[in-house]
Amino acid sequence: MTNKEKLTPVRKLDHIRICLEEEIERGWPGFDEVHLSHCALPECNLDELTTKITFLGHDFEAPLFIAGMTGGHPETKEINRRLARAAERFGIGMGVGSQRAALVDPALEDTFSVVREEAPHAFLAANLGIVQLREHGLEWVERAVEMIDANAIAIHVNFLQEAIQPEGDHDATGCTDALASLCRDFDLPVIVKETGSGISAETARVCWNAGVSAIDVGGWGGTSWAAIEGLRAAARGESGLARLGEVFEEWGIPTVVSICEAASTGGPIIATGGIRTGLHMAKAMTLGADLSGMALTLLPPAVEGEEALFQKIGEINHEFRVAMFLSGSRTPAELCSKRAYFTGTIREMLEHEGGI
Ligand SMILES: Cc1cc2nc3c(=O)[nH]c(=O)nc-3n(C[C@H](O)[C@H](O)[C@H](O)COP(=O)(O)O)c2cc1C
Image (cartoon, rainbow, N blue to C red; front, side, top):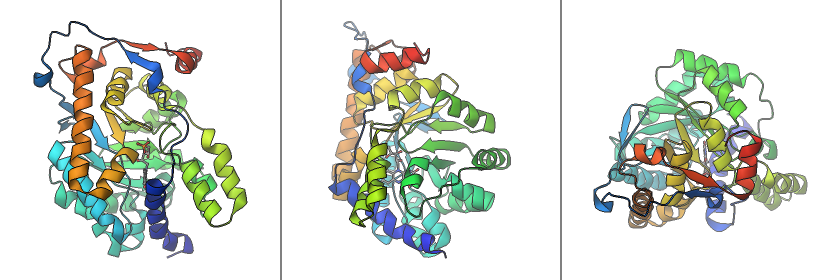
């Protein structure tokens, strides 16, 4: 085990602690500049709407995805257990955090495998970084998927975070080829996932050409890895890296713009990054997303307990239903066909892209 690998479990716990204790949202996802057209005569019944969707051949009760956050340290097992129980209870999907730590040290496997034990029917996505994919290939992907009996593998791309970690991977060459090989040789769906800087139309095309099955845009405006790694660097007294983190807090494509750009090139699309309410989910769907992923919003209730987590997801689901009702949508498919108005910076950015 390399020094870098030994540090992974500690880093995982650091991330959770910082996300719970510090203000780590930066930037702006853009949802306040997207307005769904209000339908004053919706001609549907709020209590009879269906939020069911199908994603990658799997049935979901609502278009919500618990974005991959954790596992990899013994203290994270309980969080994954609760998140998985919620996924099972609400019939939604869930990702786990990077499984690298458990691939290096099998003693940590149970912090991940708990999710399949608790969510026998849910759509689960395994998770691995693209650099680990390039270095370890199909073997690690197969082990990661097997560990949680996953329905898909999410390959995360996070070069902003890597650039600000002292132990980060700075060489991104050969990653697209590694992705294409995986898509060619692996039977389950491959999802490419950013973690807070967004996916442009150009990158999305590269991903579809590599053969990926879905893109998670992981846009700018929610959890900021520049902020998190900057805070970690400051705590270690590494002022250069702390400053680098601060400078790059403003780097990224707002989630709304990223959804529009990625959806203009193909699909399915998962909208993640600063999604905080069921109304954001509804807006994301109207812009072309199939699912909405949430991480930071669900972390505090997941740490607090099952009841708090279930209540939070129940509220989010209800907000989504109300947005469907007020836009006159009886089904998610109808919501997708509704009109959105864009204002301000979002409008300017999308016009610049020729997006609207
Ligand atoms: C505590 C924490 C840990 C995370 N760890 C991972 C990870 O290991 N792998 C990954 O692909 N994404 C990871 N993410 C990123 C999320 O999946 C998501 O893309 C990002 O947080 C943006 O969503 P949010 O604004 O709702 O938090 C993590 C997020 C949080 C909050």
